[in-house]
Image (tube, rainbow, N blue to C red; front, side, top):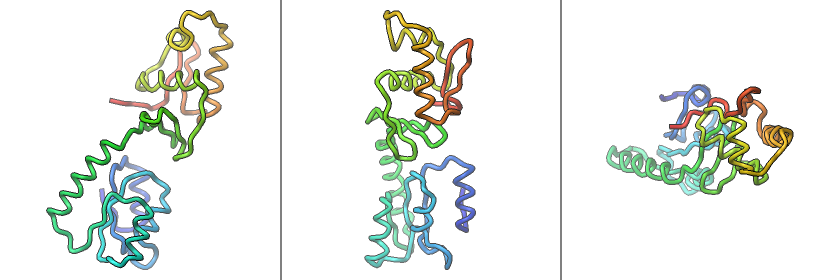
Length: 192
C-alpha cells in the first residue's frame, strides 16, 4: 500500500496491518514525514527517504528511532540492502504478540503492555494470560485453567471467577471473551 497524502497514510494504517513504513520527509506544506510519524502514535518501524541531509533534520529523524535514513536520489541496491536489514531487525527485535485493543505481550520481558505502558499482573494473572496466549485464540476450559494454575490444590469456584475478573479488570474488558459454560479466550487472537 502507498499513500500520497498524510490523511491517506492515516487511513491505510487504520485499515491494514503494516510492518514497515517508508516515508518521505517532505510531504508538502502542511506537515513533514517526521512529524506525521510522531503524530500517528504507532509502534511500526520506519525508514525515511529524503533529499534533506542537514544535521537538524537528521537529528529530528533520529528522535523517532528509524531503521534507516536514505538520501535521494535513491540507489535501488542501497534500498534493497536497507530493506533486507530492516526485515532482519524486525524479526529479531519483534518479541511482541499483538493481543488487540492496543495490548501486546512482550515474550522476552514476559510482560504485557498497553501502547507501550507496562501493566502489572500478579503471578496467577500472568500465568492465566500466558495460558490464553498459548491457546492462540481458542477457548481454554475452566478445568484446564484450574489444573495449570493451581495444580492439585483444591480451590473454590469463586477463586477462579475472581482471577478471571481481576485479569479482565486490568485489561480492556472486551479483550477476554467468557463462555460461561466452558471457558475463556483472548478475543480475535489468531497466531500461527
